Image (cartoon, rainbow, N blue to C red; front, side, top):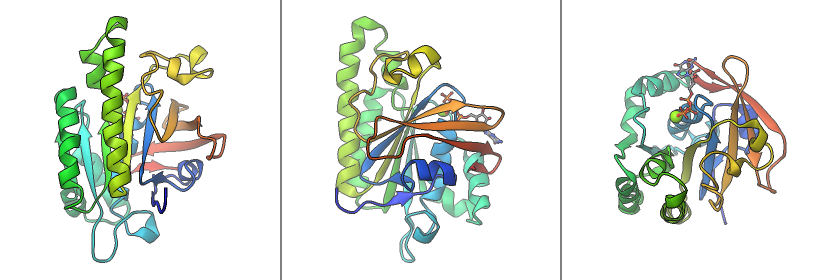
Length: 243
Ligand code: GTP
Ligand code: MG
């Protein structure tokens, strides 16, 4: 892993927890229950990657950094991108034009899109690929214990695709995974939560999100010996992810 780059999340606390931000050449997984902030983080980082390097993005004076947003649940909102762009004084229309939005209708489509990205990413200056959520279609199409092995195998292929894309093209990949809050199993081994060992072998950084009071959320890194232990508190505001 030679040179990597980092993208700010918009929260200093969360950036610090991540060792500076969302890293290129790797997969960062956000998992947690509904409303824990996974999708809002995805929106914010799709904006932030477009900031100049000195402000936490990956744009250079001659080249804007772009993002791909693969939406499997139909929860993407351009209005949020607009609000989050204005926060940094960026032109929302320009920011929106640098986000390639793709709605994935099933797991085969989701994987075909990533295959196609191997052609698109090197031509455009794409520095971030988001899959929100990575698991939804797989869960729906391969329900129950009896399909677990098949689902797992296919999902592993998908994750492998994504990690190759990240490494080859120096791109940051963010994936999300909805996991029900079940405090009893959460704190022992979060991968044991509903859905089984869904992403157990996924490479990269895994971040657990929990709801706190009001718009506060708590992030914790799971099994990453090279990152600091502990938790980060951040907020979801009208203008995006903040401290
Ligand atoms: P699932 O996809 O259902 O698993 O949830 P998620 O983890 O993706 O949650 P998401 O990122 O959608 O977070 C939803 C939360 O963000 C809501 O509970 C709101 O509190 C907050 N939120 C969404 N939009 C806005 C907004 O425009 N302003 C503010 N202040 N908060 C918002
Ligand atoms: Mg979501």
